[in-house]
Amino acid sequence: MKTIDIKILDPRMKDQLPAYATPGSAGLDLRACIDAPLTLAPGSTHLIPTGLAIHLADPNYAAVILPRSGMGHKHGIVLGNLVVIRNQNNSLNCFN
Image (cartoon, rainbow, N blue to C red; front, side, top):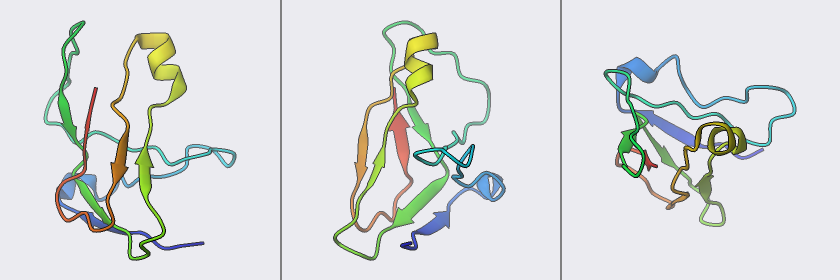
C-alpha cells in the first residue's frame, strides 16, 4: 500500500482525517472544515475547505475526489469532481 502525506492546515481537522467508513468502502470519507452550518440554496455553488493538503510523492498516482452516490440521489447535492495534482501544498477545497 502506498503512503500519502497529509498536511493538517487547520488544527480542528486533526481528529477528522480522511478514513474508510466501513471495511468494504471503496474510498475514504473527506469532511468539510467550516465554521458554521452551511445551507446550499438551489443553483448556488460554494467552495468548501477541507483544512487539509496532500502530497503524492509518486508521479504515477493521483488523488481523485468524487461525490458519494447517496448525497446526490437523496439530497440533490453534486460535488465537482477534483483530481489532485502531485504536489498539493495549498488547501484542498471542494465545490458543489
